[in-house]
Structure formats: C-alpha cells, structure tokens
Image (cartoon, rainbow, N blue to C red):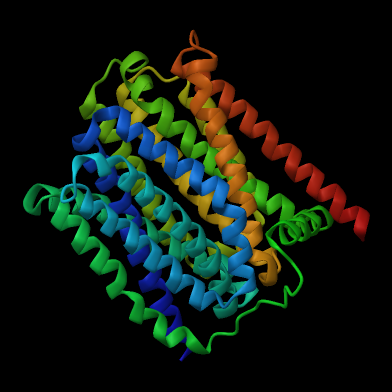
Length: 396
C-alpha cells in the first residue's frame, strides 16, 4: 500500500507541475493578445505579489486543516484560474483585465496551498531518513512535468487556440484529483491550532525557526537556492548577447544543455546512497552553485560557456532539490505549511531585489552582476552554515 501511495503522490505532483508549466505560458499569451506587453507585465506582477502576500494565509490553512483536503482545494483553485483564462476571449473586452488579474491571484493562491500541503503529505508518507532520496526522484519528475507543461501549452495554443487550451488544461487539473484517493489513509501530521489566527500562527512558526537553527538554516538555504535560479534567468539573455556575442540559438542551446544536465543529475542523485551524501553536503552544493556564477562571469567563448553552463545546471538543480529535501527532513511536520510560507516570503523578497538590479545598477554589465551575485550568495551560504554549526554546538 505504501508503494502505491508513493507512486500516486509522484504522479499527482508531476501532473500538478505540468499545470504549473501551462500556467507559465498560457496567461502570458492570452494577456499579450488582450492588452499587449503592459498587460503581460501586470499579470506577472500580480501573480508574484499575490504569491508573497497570500503565502502566510496559505501556510496557516495548510497547518490547520487536512493536508489531503488542502491539496485537493489548491488544485481546484488552480483549475478555476485556468477557467478564468478561457473566459477572457469570450466575454466583453472590458472584462479582460479583471479576469486575467483574478486568474493570476487564483493561480498563486492555489500553488501556495499545494506547495505546503504536499510537503506535509510527503513528510507523512516518507520516513525522515528516506526523504532526501525521495525528494531527488520527485524533483526529476516535477521538472519533467514542468517542461512538458510549457511545451504542450505552446503546441495546444497553436493547434487548438488559447480558449480551448485553457479549458482542456483546467479539465486535466481536475482529472488528476483521483490520484489523491490512495492517500486518504495517510496520517495528517498536524496538531491542534485552536485559538490561533493567521497572525498568531505565523508568530508561532517564526519563534519555532528562531529556536531551531537547523530548520531556519534549511529555510534560508531554500531561498538562496531559488535566488541562484532567478539570477540566471534574469541575466542570461543579456549575457549571451553582450559577453558571448551570440543570439537566440546560443541562448536556446545554453538553456537546453543546462536543463538536460540538471535532470540527469537529479535522476542519479535519487540513488539512496548518493542522496545520503547529498543530505550532508547541501551547503557545499549551494556554495558550488554560487561559485559557478562567479566562474561564468569570466567566460567569453561560446563553447566554453555551453560546457560550463551544463555543469552549472547540474549544481543549480541539485542545490534546489537538496535544499528542499533538507527542509522536509528537519522541519516539524506540524509547521511545514507556515515554514514553506516563510521560504516563499524569503524567495519573493530576494527575487524582487534581484529583478531590480538592472534598474538599481544601470551601468553594470551582466558579467559584473553575475560576479557580484555569485560572491554575495557564496558568502551568505558560508555564513549560514557557520552560524548553524555554532548554534548546534551551543545547544549540545
């Protein structure tokens, strides 16, 4: 039964990431045709802000209610957001903007609920000693689902039109809910939150993090790992043009090699013996990912950049999966929703700062920003690791 539950969990998780991939492509396409690039920007900004603002509420809901029920609710909310997209081209033009904004908010809140609730389900399904290996394998399938979602969304828009693609995507999001059926016997892992409102529940989680250095370190590490990905996404197009003298073909090649190498690394890292080593080397891998940004800043040869970017992709994917696996291993399952909300706030704050860098430092080159961000992330990783070690020894 436990093996069936894990298979269903992986199937549902990868399918939900397929929907996330659809949600990356479809809203942007529909928004562009409804109001141009400015409306695309508004929709993406709304999604980002809503994800940060609603994260504490999502964490509270996850830790207060059944993780299985919240997972299903999150999926239904995401499906509702996709249905909203289908209405954009059917209803009067004046409703396009509010429908797109509402869809973005629903998608962000649905994802917030799914992220926390599924983390709690994973903790209930998988013993602590096996979570790193399981999360490595899960990350591989999630990445595959995400990649398929973006590709299928583009193909469906071309072949069926955006309205039909949105309806079909929403139906797929609802059709995978039966995969949660075998998980109904999973222990909830939650504890009573009677008398706690969202604010007091968030304060409880914050006190927990302050008193548990390993959990706080794990949450910060997740934020730093995602920051590395955000830095590369922001700076790579300009770096390709200005530092490497390339174009869209080189940009696509770099992204493709990094994705393939990263997924291959996740597949190998899922081997239990390697995953156990990864659990002890999370900070080292993240420091290596930060160092890869520093090395990349010196590259001017396209062939060298392709090789290095593939190696960097391995480190980025491993650091992100290892950081999340470590978080799931050390954090109390009763607070995992609120701790995940904290990582969302941290990731959103770092992402906002990173995305403002070209505006704040307009004269800096992409190579220079790669260097600065790499050094900053490396130092932050080392400091967090040293602080965690000192706090752990102080408590012994």
